[in-house]
Length: 126
Length: 133
Image (tube, rainbow over all chains, first blue to last red; front, side, top):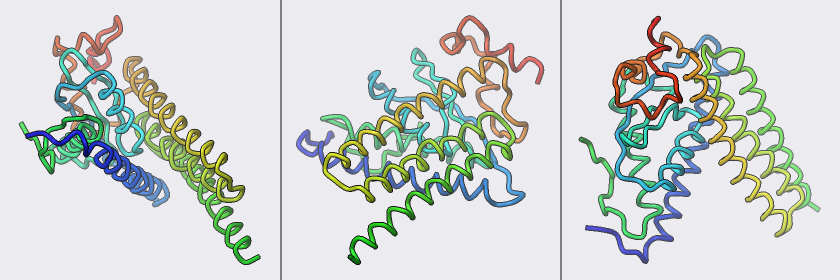
């Protein structure tokens, strides 16, 4: 099952809206963390196995993840289709963090491809 | 007249809010424990802070052309800031800047021994950095 190519503008707008919201929410979270006296971040670095992405999609994914201030891509291995992402609010829960990154990937794929997998939630857990 | 006043208030509030976000990122630079969390703090200033100031200026001096310029400026700012943060974090890791000890899990350090990571290192093994930890 794939999505209809005609719905691409709608899907792209959905991606844009979701990204803007995510960007503002995480910026406020990071600022709040900094401004709360005595509070320290609970960072973590996880390895994420990526789907088959084109170079442009991979670049966009790295950009989206890095722009949202709580997450930061440290390394990308294109051959192994793996990337390492630093998160500010992981708090030891690597699986939740990893699946949120996979969700970002699924949203990106739905927002930029003419024919994207039609799964709604994008929870493609291994 | 009142519309003008409202525009001035909203525009100025956005400018002040943007400056406030940048100031808090500056505090974060001093307060946070390692390169990666500090880079994240800078992300708020470079992203939200600058965007708020651009939106504020567009509100204060609104025209179709300024709106277009503002959108282009924000998109360009976000993209370059993302690539800059990524390059900073990556080069920081490759030159041996270790994440703070409370970083858990650190799957990048765990994977350093893996031969699959040849693509990540530029002539220098990632394992060099983690050998001491």
